[in-house]
Image (cartoon, rainbow, N blue to C red; front, side, top):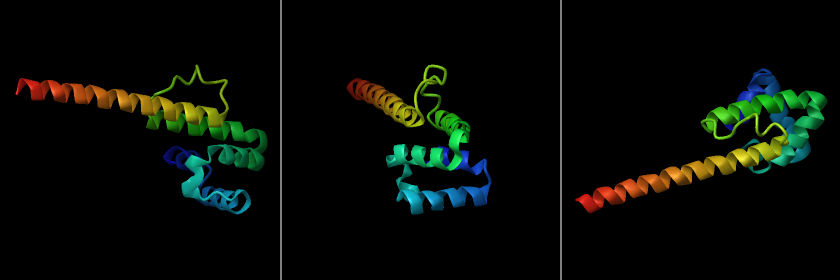
Length: 115
């Protein structure tokens, strides 16, 4: 949600609020529900901005990539739709988190065994 908020902020605060209101009124998606309905959000942005939606989606993906510590290579994901990219970023981030958690548990178990 932070990445979407940052991307829309590039349009100005009043524009961002107007877009959220429009999405809620015409697409029945509250701001807080956007991350779970990213396909509807993408459709709304495309209907609102037409071909200009691509620039906004690219900006949001950059913010998302920063937020997930560069979990995905943007060059390798250039053929994905916005919704596909968000799903891939979520999977990659979750996999990285799981890996870090497993590594942490292993280190903890080793410390416990050493006493």
